[in-house]
Length: 438
Image 1 (cartoon, rainbow, N blue to C red):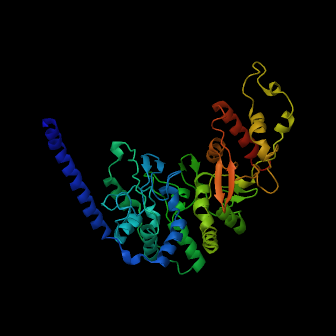
Image 2: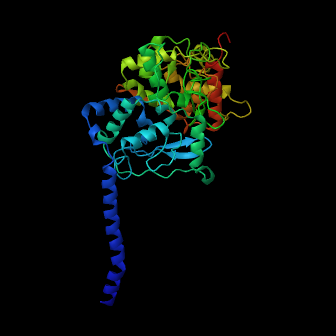
Image 3: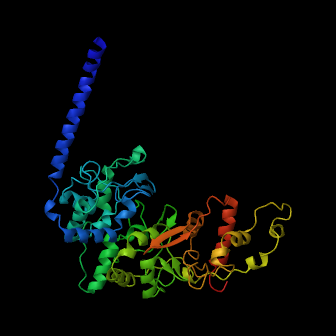
C-alpha cells in the first residue's frame, strides 16, 4: 500500500501538468482561431487562390519528396548558410498556419516576418512576393486557410551553424536589399506585358534562380530596370539557371515565341531544350498548369526585357556535331581502344557513350526524329558554357510529368566510377558542345 500511495503521489503532479498543458493548448488554439479571417472563406476566392498557388509554385518548396501537400519538411541547401527545412503551410492550428490572420499571412509573404515576429530566411522568396496585389494576397490566404487539408506534421529543425543562425542580421539585409512595393503596371506597356511582368517578377519569382547574386547573396536586380536581371543565376543544388534574357548568343534571343511557349508549357522542344532538375519541377507543378493567356503574357515580357550578353561565343542550342568515333568502335573488342599496357583499364568516353547512351540518343547523338529521345546535337543543356546541368543529368537523370505524360532519363551515379564519369562527360562536351564549324 505504501508503494501504491507513493506511486500515486509521484504521478499526480505529472498528471496535473498534462491536464494543464492540454487545457492551455486548447485556450491557445481557440485564441489563434479567433484571428482567422473567416469572412474570406468564399468558394470563388478559394478557387482563385488555388490557381495563384500554382502560379507561385508553392508546392515545390513546401512539399517534401513523398510527403503530404504543403506539409513542409523539404531540405534546402543554402550556400553560405546551411540546410533549411521548409515550413508546414497547411491550416493545422498547431504546426501549420491555421491560426494566422490575414495580416500575419501578408506580413510573412511580403516582408518575410513570421507569426511570432521572427525574420524568415530569404529562401522564402518574399522579395518577389512583395509585388503581389492585395486582392491576390486575400485569395492566397483564403486558399491556404480554407482550401487545403490540414496536416499535423512538424518539420525538422534547421541545420545552420550557430554563428549564422541569428535572425537580427536579416533586418539589416532586408533594409539594404529588399524593395517591398506592390507591382505597379507601366502605363507605356500593354496589359499583356504588364501581366507577364507581374507574374515573372512576382508570383513565378523567376529571378530567384535566374538572376545573379551579390556578395550578400542578394539578387542584383528585381525587374527589367536593374542591371543583369534574369541573366543567369548561381549554381544551386548542382543546377545552374541560365540566362533567359533575349540576348541572341548568351540568352534565348534566337528562340521563337512558339518555342519559348512550348518549353514553358511542356519542358521539351525538339532539338533545342529539355527541362531537368528544378526547372522540370517548376514546369511540372506550376507552368504546365497555368492558363495559356498567362504563359503568353510571360513570353511577351521575357522577349522584351533588355538583353544581357555573357561570355558565350555561340548560342548553346547551336553547338555540337553528330558523333563519329562511336561508329568505328561498334563491333570491335574493348581491348582495341583501351590502354595497350593494361587491357582492363577503363574504356574511353566514346565507348562509354556507346554502351550507356547510344541506345536512346542514337549512335551519332541525334536522337529520334520526333524528339522522344532528345538529340544531344544542338542541345541547350549539353552546349551550355558550363557543364553543371549536364553533369547533374548524367548522375541523377531527368524526370518530369506533364499532362500525364512521363519523361524519364535514368541517372548513372551508381554505375559509373569517378574516372568513367569524367571520361563520359568530357566526351559529351568535346563532341556535342563544340562551337559551330569545329
